[in-house]
Length: 304
Image (cartoon, rainbow, N blue to C red; front, side, top):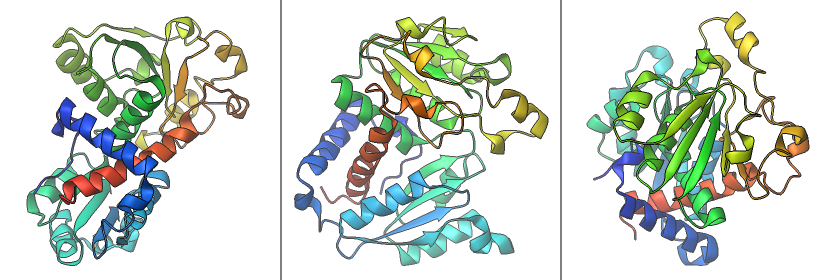
């Protein structure tokens, strides 16, 4: 039995196979429409989610399976004090696979250690968000043709942004990838990412504050929102929430084929006027996410 806690749980070859499977599902959906007949996915979401939870549910339903679960901690026995370990033991009796989101870092790992079914980390605090990373990788490969030879700018909340942390870990395994980190000083990437991931592996990167200065050199711009739920006080959040706003003026500085990604939801960091730009790929990104989650479910359930 296998779990997914981090994008690093899969080798580069396994990631390529997973993306190939997702691409086949996208191209020939009828071939996979009954692969999960009689199987049940449990979605255990201790934090609010729209895209990730519904993407998992849509993925399982499109594979012919069924879904059960809860959307907030308040609607589960966690409100009564039940531990994650006990919850997953119960869920393991009802379902065949589980997707878990939790505000505490490492909670899905604890669940996996006690589970009798595969567990997928659907986001744990500011730590990891591996299925968003799988989505990002598939989007880039599908639209760019490769995951190598690019400069990617990551902009916004790089301190608490679990999508950013997961994506960096995944992309360092590909050739000739360099990073530009764009953030206010308070939201810089954590030291452990800078030192243990980038410097340790001799990955080229630079850190800047102004987005305008680096727009012309980027092949991909990955925007993130400043997350209110990660801040300890409202004053800091209000001060930083509109630090970056991507608009038409800034897009005019970018390459003609630069791609804009965003894990969503957005607040103010991408102006709606950018939505009509052919380089805005964040809504396509959502659809790729469903196909890669379909491929992941099939792979963990050993149905392919």
